[in-house]
Image (tube, rainbow, N blue to C red; front, top):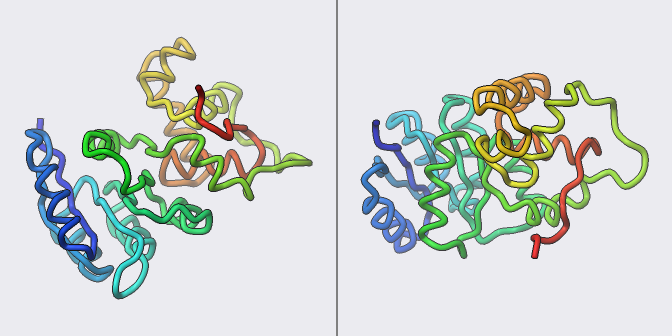
Length: 219
């Protein structure tokens, strides 16, 4: 199996060098390049065609969210994971709207970031459900529901499971479906909601009041 091609973009050189060094210790991950600006992120993503981009939000020439949107527009199959210390609700909203696959804190362990790269390469959403609830609390309906969901009951059940941070295999076990069936439902959900990622689908479900997620991590 080909190694996961990763582009690291962060204007803090010590951090990006350390992250690249850690990622290179994994036999299934190849760091194909690094950058430190929005322009470098977009240009490198176009030239190197990475599978996953690890991207900071704050850069000298603008926002990493701009870079994420441009990367997804020019190469939708590239998965973008925001790796930042910024947990502002507005930033996460913008990242989700830009089509990112995940949103991680720089406080995560090296092992968690490595796993995040592997999960992102599989298209899995990468954010703890309690963080999503806290940061998107303003999006969650508190009174009247939004428009009727275009999803079937089974598709809605899959979306609820995704909102709990479960990957496709976990969803399959919980809902007693085959992994292939879950993948089909996920693709139908993305298509019907006109979104690019599971994370964006979950945020849409929260915003419209179709799903509810825990406010804090389970004990």
